[in-house]
Length: 386
Ligand code: NDP
Ligand code: MG
Image (cartoon, rainbow, N blue to C red; front, top):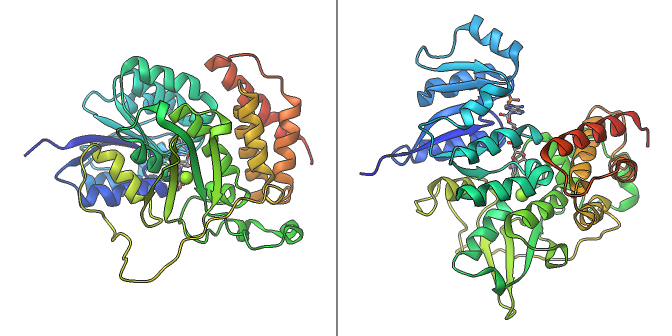
């Protein structure tokens, strides 16, 4: 028997985190959880440490860490720490083979770069960090020769379809999109969309931020930028198609016109398991598609007028430099302000567009410049009333 792969999971208490735990439970002979991190949900993190006998845990939030110490619910065998440095240390844990990055937002960037420098393979669910620092992440991963395994379902699908084909043979990547919860809602009714309505997805069960991003298709915009970095294709070779069933997770079109697709149920355990066990395969956690039952697949081009965030993401990708980082930061603030009922649903793209016109992007920005632009954009997007 081979020794289990040792896994560090950043963002263990979230939506991707809980799907990952399902994969780990099913494949405990092949995968061992050695480190976990969360922001503040200490009860949930303690329960994970007890169940999986995890040796290292980080609660990013200091107050939550102190509460956890008081509660004493982490096992004595778990080394618990707190803070940004602790997160980076966890990502570089000597015994870890692979780090699954499933924290939300750009907070994941520095720990990911540190893990790459430490020679760890990376399973990447977090897309925001690639949108901000894609150039730096890809360069570091190439230099260190580590695997960057795409866990976002579309990118995982593309990664699977590309196995064995040289990049010169690839013409286009076609990302599928569910169209979100308002795909059948007439454009004029979008003005009255509430946070409660926008946080319910028809096909996927995900965290609130990404669910709103699915409705606006800002998520697909971020994924276009993510695909650009992961697979090295320019915007003219990246397309989006609406596919309401979320069964085909993306397509690769080759130069001879042949198109390959990866198909599985809309459940993140498929992509997560593929990354964690790569290049091995094993039985899935949940049943796959049953062809004994009739079903159909629909595809249609997106209506850009209904999804202005998608067009803004294309524009940002074409501008390059820090424009994708501005798109991402402005979108994050816009979604937070929409969820806090400060701005309306239709204000989300307006705030992104405004931010893109206000911030000046330096050429080939350094990591520090990118973080600075991220902060500046957040201030601008916070202060502006669209
Ligand atoms: P959730 O909000 O459900 O979970 C986020 C997780 O990250 C939680 O464990 C949270 O801890 C933790 N966290 C947040 N900030 C920090 C921080 N600064 N330091 C340490 N831990 C932190 O998000 P999702 O699981 O939905 O998404 C995670 C990432 O994966 C996102 O980048 C998203 O875009 C991407 N993704 C998600 C998909 C999905 O199906 N959900 C699909 C594809 C990609 P706590 O619980 O304590 O707050
Ligand atoms: Mg996705």
